[in-house]
Image (cartoon, rainbow, N blue to C red):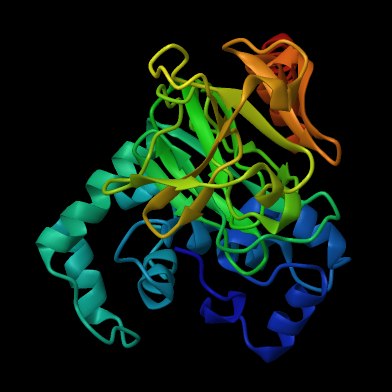
Length: 337
């Protein structure tokens, strides 16, 4: 969970104003940019030791149940990292809270034990952080980032932190209302922070959160529990120009009509809305076959030389600089270093 930067104990209005002016408005920002960057941007007006302490407290606050007050008490007692948090028995840590004059409430030993189990997990799993922005460099708040069973959202600065990701290759899915969803594979092999900034492209015609699919009946994204599909029949004239379409259910009906479904989808709550149309073969300019892309243009429906799969690959590459090729390149460079 991200907190406003002023919530960290020791950061008052003066320090908070300095940090906000250089773009550090939340604890996620503190983690994303790191102590060295922040120290250099503040040009020595705040000591590096103090910035390191704020950064350590921000990392502690990634553990559920540890808020600004608990992080301050732990940092003051030199339990200021995931490693040192696990070095002391729950009973000893509870005693530290009892002796602290800052403690509003005393955590139970069971609660402290849960913190310690999470701290151990974080030491042996992957850790990514960054910002999600539009192509115009505007931060996107409330974007969802999901890797396996771990999920988070961006804060008001567009920053996110996601820890506890199992090692090796995992699919990362980023989605936000009004933007293309983004999906690729990342590879993690240590708990060192991996910075990953992501740029999302605006979805066409203001449609919200298009869902990436490879086929009409074979979804390749991981849907939320309770999601369901809603099919919405439309006419050709209802569809905006440049809408990409794919054929489905060829040969299932005997009415001679071709059925097309839009590749772009809309999420409304837990509903994934599928736009579909039925047309006569002569309404489409060019040969139609399953897997072939059809575009709605100002002149009507036109077949495209690309396949649906080729179109989606191009779409993903335009949606973000993070492509499988770039991730492989980054991984190789790190191994060589």
